[in-house]
Amino acid sequence: MAKQKAGKVVLAYSGGLDTSVIVPWLKENYDCEVICVCANIGQGDDLSGVEAKAKASGAIKCYVQDLREEFITNYIYPTIQAGAVYERKYLLGTSFARPLIAKSQVEVAELENADAVSHGCTGKGNDQVRFELTYQALNPKLKVIAPWREWAIRSREDAIEYAKKHNVPISVTLKSIYSRDWNIWHLSHEGGILEDPWQEPEAAMYQLSVAPEQAPDEPEYVEIEFEKGVPRKINGRAMGAIELLTALNQLGAKHGIGRIDLVENRLVGMKSHGVYETPGGAILIEAHDALEQLCLDRETLHYKQQIALKYADLVYNGQWFIPLREALDAFVRETQQTVTGAARLKLYKGNVILVGRKSPYSLYREDYATFGQEDVYNQKDAEGFIRLFGLPMKVRALLDIERHGKSVYAAPDYSKFKRD
Image 1 (cartoon, rainbow, N blue to C red):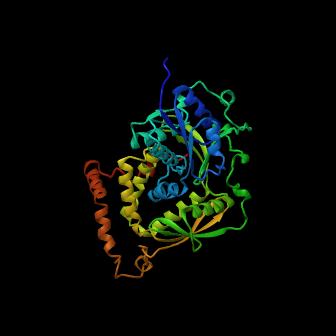
Image 2 (tube, rainbow, N blue to C red):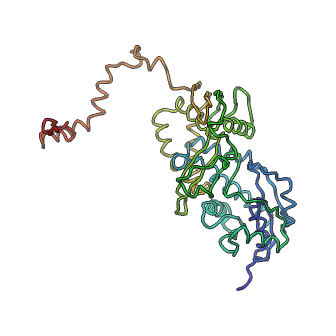
Image 3 (cartoon, rainbow, N blue to C red):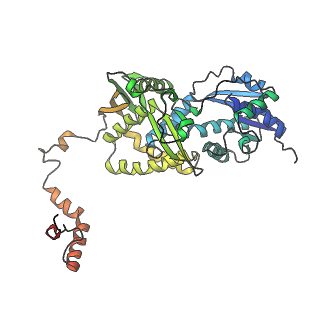
């Protein structure tokens, strides 16, 4: 078999064992130069030595990029505003991070005149789809190299052996039984005892949040202010995007908030069991929902709930860079024009309890809702409304009576039932 060639390959690089091994593997199998891209999206790792490690592994360059601000403002906030939650629970922490990393790769590839991009995703998961759909959307001329779908490495031991053979600097530590993904929005856990969905996750698995039963015995109140759907202040103090989300993560983790246990449907066709920690995100979503209760009219809110399901599917499936997501964003942005105000929440032992909300654009008016006022809402008007609203039901019942002598929903004659 002839050796494959690629002039320059831009690799999504984390500095871990797998991506470190990919560097010499690409050089060996594609006769190429390797340029690494390491994205800081708040994963908590010390990235100070990543560039040196990448070069020691054989890369000619390594770009270390701080993408946290872009991640929050251009990916997290739009998804919160859309109300997108996958399969009723998952707050999409890994899903919308992958297109951002892939976009960064494409930008570097174009800057460096590279002809290929590569990632370290396995052939069984969703992430390979998320990376590669982004490559296709942003530069379909780039060749895609997915080592996990090609190489003979099948275990951690294989990877360590390959690293030693190619003089790749690695620090071999005791591997966690869990597969994790961490960024400023969430921490996910898969594998280990989670492969049996009947098993309760062990306490030691959680890395961010305390167990609710270990959280403080006194509740804590927090007030979050929004401007056009974007969070701007915590307890009256203005903060930037990174500072604000970091503060809410610390607050939520302290009170055991944001733990989610979900058996989800992967895009590639199988189910997987994951546990997620999203402490700050759980607080933000509750606060944002509270303001929309006040500020959106019924028809807009109800329609927005419908598109939230589609938006979540698009994000989960890696379809960030498609016209439909952009069109849905345009709708969502319009709905957020009046989502300005504050929500007050009580945090207590794993619970985010809404205790107050206010907005200058509130559509809730106590004087309209009260039973005593007749100038805005005349109770006599309800009679005609109910007659018209129920007209299809009335017509069906009349036809049933004409044909069968009673409505299909008529109460049964209980006198015919025998008693024991």
